[in-house]
Length: 130
Image 1 (cartoon, helix red, strand yellow):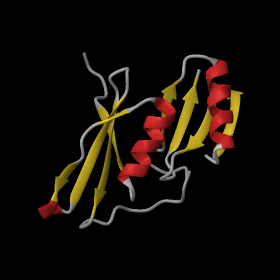
Image 2 (cartoon, rainbow, N blue to C red):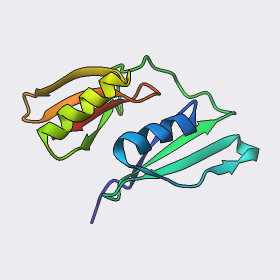
Image 3 (spheres, rainbow, N blue to C red):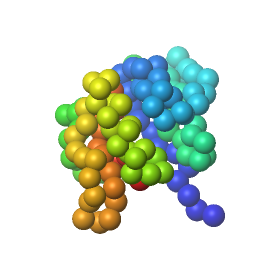
């Protein structure tokens, strides 16, 4: 079976980003990995479905920065299914009240999804799907 095992995100603050995904989506944080000689740290987030996100930081590389929420070439967003339209509505409202940027929706899209688009603390676009 072919499936995406994980995606990786560079972050300025691993702990803050991991806490966001844990708080809103129930992700379980793995232990922090440190490679001092390479100036690299990472932590995996695991979701109930088996999907994972690797959150990484570096002291030696200089990953290209982008404007928060920018539409860019390459990976521009990822989607998290919440299970129902009401769950999308509730999560978008909860996030909005907490100050999380909600860029669009909730709404029905032209390709048939019911979604809201939000930003995580590092400016990555997340589609919340029914």
